[in-house]
Image (cartoon, rainbow, N blue to C red; front, side, top):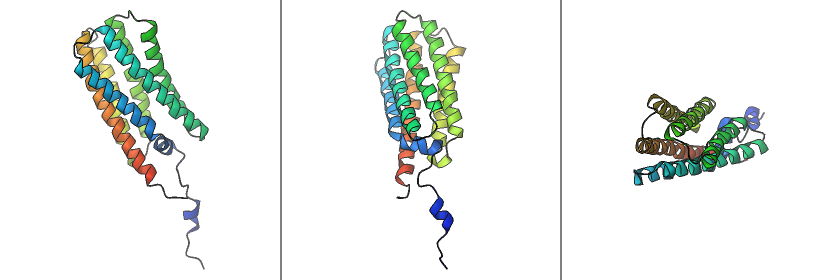
Length: 199
């Protein structure tokens, strides 16, 4: 009589849920984190940035963030995994970037409304995704990124008439926190993926 547990043979090598999908796309999350850190660094290095400079920085970051969200979604779709949230997240960022490119003479108040809307919507998506992520795959990091986004958006709504310099500083702090959580999430996911047993 064999001592081999038949259930062990039937366990999937790689999960096909949200945790598995994110683990396979850890590199895209890492690039999003690095882009956020670079954006935050620019905000601190150039604290006296004009409104135009602020828009250029944010549009570039939102475009990079959106593109890599879409890339991750396409890869997930090809593998038959969940992709709708990533597409929605990417489209929000790309839309925000497009608005700034199409409307270059946007006022500081309109920019703050745009930033607040973008931050809250993406933050809520990240928090929702965190609940679908396994704890060992970095649920805390994704949740913290979502909370940071929502808090940043709420702060902009509470103080809608702050100047461009203050918004630049706030963006720098937010981008630094968001970037660190994304990099930490990517490292955690890569570690979980490398620990998957070989077929």
